[in-house]
Length: 167
Image: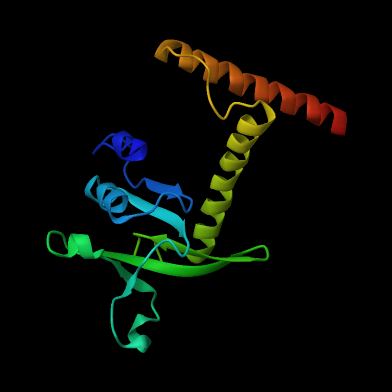
């Protein structure tokens, strides 16, 4: 819901590709991104149900799939998406994108973008675990931003000390 609130039509640069992990899935979110003139790339797992675009397996080898939950079938058309199996290190995973043309978004570009996103996830995990900031403690929205700013700054200082020790 927070992501959908942040995505407003024309409030992000043209050709923005929203990159997310397996928690950012579902017809409502994806259709909202597409209606806002954006595209997305997400890792998907068993929590996502997709349909082959064609009953003929040979035609489905291009990776085109449909996301069309039963609850939406009466009111909205399906989302045409591209499902790609990738390997990152030893891990095999599935990436789903709204960019249907494999020349506009190659498999290597998908892997590169996913790896870039992963660095941010590691930082958030460090913030939550190292500094015990899984829950912010202030009760005022202005103080909340200050608490978050200082927490991120403290994390950066801790990382600089760790780097100094390593060197």
